Image (cartoon, rainbow, N blue to C red):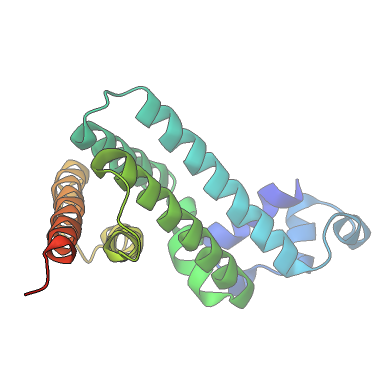
Length: 200
C-alpha cells in the first residue's frame, strides 16, 4: 500500500508532493506503519524506482525472448517495450526520467542502474560481434552512448520535444542504435588490425 501510494504521488505530483505524511494519508495508514517498513522517505522512493525498473526489465526480457535472434528484431523489441511501458502510463516515465534526476537518492540509484545497463549492452554486443581485444574500450563507449541516449530520447519524446509518432520513434531509434553498434565493431576491428601490423 505504501509503495502504491508513493508511486501515485511521485508519478503525478513529483518529489515536492511526496512526503511521509502525504504517503501515509494516501495509503490511509498511521506513520508508525511507514517507519516499520522503511527507514526514511528516500528508502521508499528508491523502492518505487526499483520496482519500476524490475517491471520494465521483465517485460523487455520477455519481449526479446519472444522475438527472433535477428539483432534488428531484438533492438526493436527492446525499444518498443520500453517506449510502451512509459507511454501507456506516463507516471512511470515521470518517475524514471524526471523525478530520478531531481532527488539525490533517486539519482544515485539511476546512475547505478545505468552502469548495470551499460554492462548488459556490452555483453549483448560481445555476443553479436565477438569478445573485444584486451584494452579495447570502444564497446564501453558505445554502450554508454546507447544507454544514456535512449533515456534522453524517451524523456524528450514524452515531454513533446521530439515530434514523432511512437512507431517513428521506435523505428528511428532502432536504426541508429544498430548503427552505433556496427560502428563500434568496425572501430574495434580496425584497431585490432593496426595492433597486429608489424613495426616498420
